[in-house]
Image 1 (tube, one colour):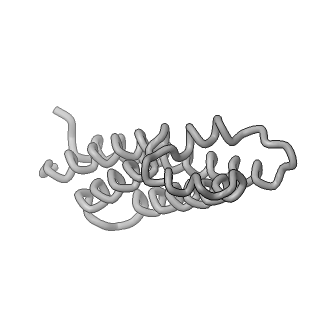
Image 2 (spheres, rainbow, N blue to C red):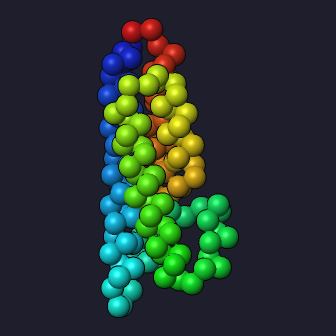
Image 3 (cartoon, rainbow, N blue to C red):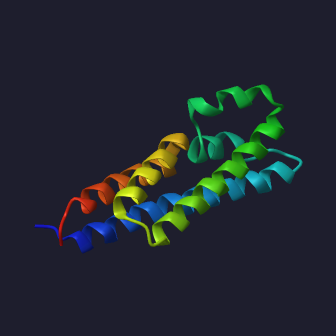
Length: 127
């Protein structure tokens, strides 16, 4: 049987991978925003953040849209990394990671949702 400590270790690993991918994707979009020729937006947009919530932002010009996605990607990544290292309950951490993962779908969001689910499972264990 898997112990609570092992579950938390796996949850932290998945959540940190998702947070780091969000930050890296956001930074790539931010760098791409200042380049004269656009090389990353389609790839990075799909990897970083692609969700229905931000479809309203597509009315902005393409460069402003990329900048908003870059800022949100870095913010989601930073918040998830801080949550994993914070001293709050496993249940609260799991719920917040799932919410961030759903809002910021894409590849990193999947890691955050998996990490959040494992945190919630770990919170039900006694040891």
